[in-house]
Length: 391
Ligand code: NZQ
Ligand code: ZN
Image (cartoon, rainbow, N blue to C red; front, side, top):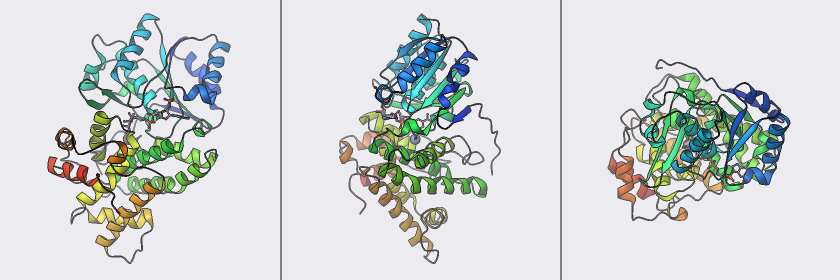
């Protein structure tokens, strides 16, 4: 196990009705807030009204940045920074999914930066101060509510890039599973694939002997496999939504990854796909992951892939390890299919045209410490395998 520091400064208020803590949490950092949200789901669900009435009752002034898009764009970050400066706001309250939260984090990092915020995305060492961020999560997926990462897209340069700095951890996050009852089936499924991918990116790693981390990973994967179909059948099943929500937060906050290399493989490939085609992040991951597993299955990786099959998918322990590993990959693919996720690139509007260009871009990431090193040729082979069904 590698050395690590475990330090997550985010206070979590989990469960029904925890929104009542919002005014006090704001009062601890100021009186004037920027309310950041997405394309309108919080208005339809009534959450917007609930928050606005809490702000009014507590004499908290606010400005709004609505309309943050999925795969948040750098222009929304610029807009938010301008509002913070113009109205001399103290902190940011982000209400929504990962896109809204990430946009808010970049705003918090950019307010006191004397330059364009895209420079921070490209070089996070320039982030010196961050305004306080409070999040109210409405969708279980990215874990942005408990990590310090923001993933921002720049359509001009066709880049989508994660950046992080310690100050970007939310100061507090309010996680009420009831807010996720209205998440549509397609996003529930995509969110589950994202959670599982965050777990798998660390579970499949060159560092061995991190038994407790790998045990956490297996429990988290089994939780998703059990509860996602329930949430799809019955969107207001509190137990299912609560388990998915808490797993999402745990999946990327270091619990299963600290002490390991944390060198991811599928995310850098997916970020290129969604930078070029603006696809849903979790869908891109679901399509890529089983093909990536198949591409890297070899003598060096077969033990961990077989363990995944036996411990996560309950594949017959008597099965020989190569066959077990292949069966685990097949079951993962089948699971995503049964969640209703489109499992090929053409189904999400991606054809062969830019595969080589995207593979070359994805190859710029460093995969040397990843579970299995990937070359540009490997990435292209993975993209090509995504063009047709695996079954
Ligand atoms: O925009 P609104 O109207 O709110 O609708 C959203 C959006 O259309 C909707 N939604 C969210 N909560 C809802 C709801 N609809 C009904 N009821 C609710 N309660 O769902 C759609 C997707 O929202 P989005 O925020 O884009 O989804 P997600 O949470 O999956 O975030 C994806 C973004 O996060 C990045 C991804 O790359 C992508 O840009 N990631 C962030 C990470 C991080 N910060 O650590 C790590 C991840 O690996 C990921 O890269
Ligand atoms: Zn992700």
